[in-house]
Length: 463
Image 1 (cartoon, one colour):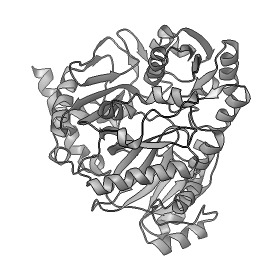
Image 2 (cartoon, one colour):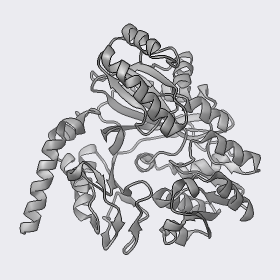
Image 3 (cartoon, rainbow, N blue to C red):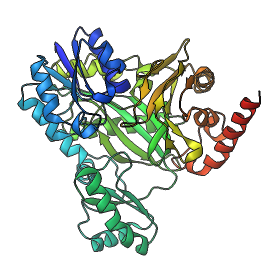
Image 4 (cartoon, rainbow, N blue to C red):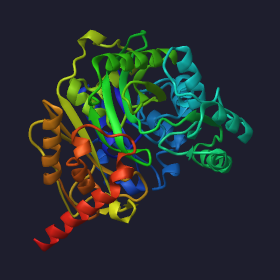
């Protein structure tokens, strides 16, 4: 087993990794920027080292600094968490070249899975359904127009190296596609250093379903069920559920098997997620992308399976085989996660970082809160706006919804605005309660939800 792990991240995911390492008997080395000197992961780690100023490019994205700290502190493993360098193939290669175990797949695997256009081709060969679209990258706008004419509008232009909703443009006709092509290339280059695009048919009103997989270096691959991530704004997830509601047993089995084939096709090792779009009829699903890291929403899969995914990452990276086979995995009950972000939905979701003057997290049976916040700390403006992940587990979906409502009623954070009230309103929306939500849900219902939230706030002030 690994003995000392450098945690190349910050915030709640750094804490999550730290705790799994400690429970596995591993020492931890935290890194932090000048802005995170008082962060909770810094205080709880075995050792902590400052790696640069607040700007991520000079700290958490500074590969040389991270590798220098790892070697100087005697680490034998590096866990990248999610975001930052977690899907950076060059960093994975650099860790291995430095004699460090990168807790994730190899650089080659990250490149194969991370190139969205190439991944689509691999999935086709592996028998995984993909949306109709271009056969590889579209090098010129004329190529994009030709592919769109073949599959039919509307279509999506997407960055081959993309992620996080960046480098994506919806096009409903030729004129829109002609205008969007240059814009999408420019955004892709600015965000990913790669302006390559591909095109795919837009699946209207889909659900966003993802399947969690684990794969070891001995050829064993299992899936741990599915999650529904359809409640999202601008491709950023807000509420997730496990398992996805309303799938037939046959469809759920097909998606799980497809995810395993996808992992085997790229030679995957570690914890990963295969993401699919499910059509409005709930009958056909299509491969969207593969995330080669732990997901933000991994906790709800842990709640319904009882499997510690970060512990499994550490075991796999240590060379151990999976402890479970597919037949051993059971999904029990239902779990929901609400992401509480430091943003104001009433001001077009403007970021609202600041100091925490009072904080109280919900508790009780079936409740979990992952957060790096504490009373008196500050949520930095330099990084992601995620303040806390509130998770609730119940024997049924309705029980989980009711428990999550209670959790958000107990959740108290003073010092800056959050989106918690918006999530609370969603939990009462009839379409959400019935499980009839697609990725357009928030876009279609946001004005009504914000009006409810505003009136609730006014009533609270009057009281």
